[in-house]
Image (cartoon, rainbow, N blue to C red):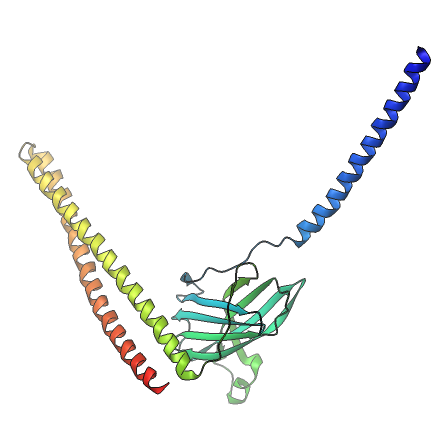
Length: 284
């Protein structure tokens, strides 16, 4: 009986050891594979489309579109900007790709008008992971002489913003070669859509201000009714509150007047853009 127990104990120990070894090997293999996956797993880095972003200074920039043509292995990026540069400054672009290591790719400006830029990006790896696009403001050194201003090292460069596109998020689409008139037509559509959006925002804000004025008028009427039953001291305090409401109403009315003026400007802008679009349509 004792001999049988020893055999069973030995057999159980062997089974336990083999099980422990198998679990250890599986754990080790999982550890190696998880490390590999963790190294390959890159966080998504992708700047949102149609979202206005503030940049260095008072400028604004929006990505209207960012598409990747897999067959041509190139990208087209359309940017809408406001107040990025002055007459003495220029905007340039530099692009980089991430594909195991970081490397430069060509960023070529194919169209520019009214702060809208269309860029083509070339030299992409077929297995690119992410693309970074630097928006750079370039100005000449005001103390440099005429000869020095022609040299690149006399330029002052400032990166205003870095925009990103991720392979997992970028829109895949065929990129059509366009003439200048076709680009102008496309950008007229972009500007019309942008103008309509600004008009809608102005109208929404005007409605909010009108509602605010009505609420303040009701609050004034309510306080005036309360004054009938108040003491002289309470009436003075209520009168002060009413005057505060009246000042807010005047401020709101001024804002509504400014919004109406802005809407007229935007309406005129839209009409001119639509006229230009009709003219371009005839020339294409």
